Image (spheres, rainbow, N blue to C red):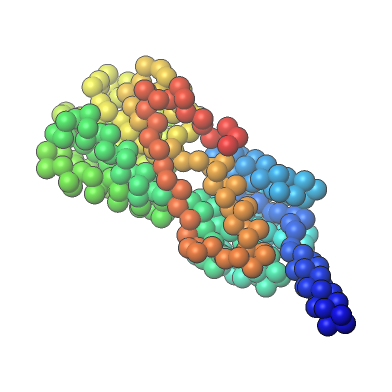
Length: 310
């Protein structure tokens, strides 16, 4: 009887100890590129929604790095001082941010990179950008029936842009009738940059059928340039699925498709993965890629958009 009681007591103690070891998130720090960008606002809101769902009393601290590395270093120091359990990091500089990441980890904080990889982070959650570039350019090939003159409007050489262009080039290379007239002009990731690059291309190339831009602002700028020079018959495809592109797809523009990102889902998955890491469960693959879906004029009406809760 004594042995049996001792065994039962031992099992009970093990169960209590097991539960005691489970680490609850009490606070989370989120630092993103710019809260002036709806993409990052959605990341912040998606993260907070998931944290509150899992731990209703947890606190979420959100900061805008404004693409300033030094400012982001300070924000991470502040998160460490505040004793957060988890940091979601959209790095201003993927490599240079590593010392801050290591400092946070040394303090017992899990660090999950969001949207772009960050050196030393415990995990990264981002869009499958190669696939996004691929499906955006498959739309172009299909619309042109595999034959025509196209432009790849490039952008800042961060990993996401490089991957999108890579996916697009793979598709165009597999279509012998597609001729790429230019693939190295930087549209700066902005509407103004896209417009300026496109004005030059439209002046230079009289026969142009389609343009792939690395993001939606450049796509909108490209359409504005075409309007200004009264050039019609273009097929414009891009990556983002941003609110502005939803409007463009519903109105009289030459923008026809955008491979969507899902910042809400991205942030929510990052919180779940961060919670798992804090409780000793590392992801099978530290790089989590979220597939992109193509938003077109045909399906934009049913597209949930960036800010819709999932």
